[in-house]
Image (tube, rainbow, N blue to C red; front, side, top):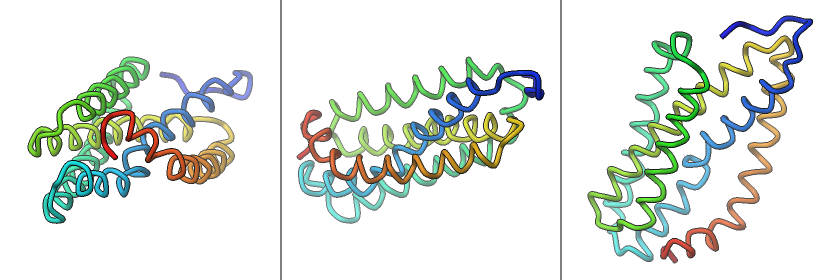
Amino acid sequence: MRTPTAHHDSRPLLAIGVTLTLIGGAPFNILPLITAAAVDTLGFSDRQAGVVSFTLSALAGASALLAGSWVRSVSWPRAAAFSLGGMLLANAMGLMLHGYWWFVVLQGLSGFMSSAAFALGMTLLSDRPESARGFGITTALQVVYQVVILLAGPWLLGIGGID
């Protein structure tokens, strides 16, 4: 994908980049809710909840490290669709499959895919002419999102059967 020039309107890239970083950051933002719900509702031990958290974090980190090898060599729309679709699938299945190992694997997959979406979003923002502005907008919206999701999170998790 070519880098926008001064003559090219980069507002769509800003919107897409911000959206990908917000969605890609979601599993980390709700990780405290996921681990608490895993203990309280699913009956996981503290140690098992720690494994869920570690798996999500470790696979997100692996995905971030791998992003440098693919983010400039693939179709960005396809990469976005693949990472967002993978997140959606993992999280939807995680709402239905509450067995310990299923939950661990699905949260790890969610972390991996979310980090790929986040890396792609940050790359899109960095390719804009005013990249610092894009990063600032993303950071501000991440804070707003974190507050909103911590307030609405328990209700949203309850829809999936996790109290």
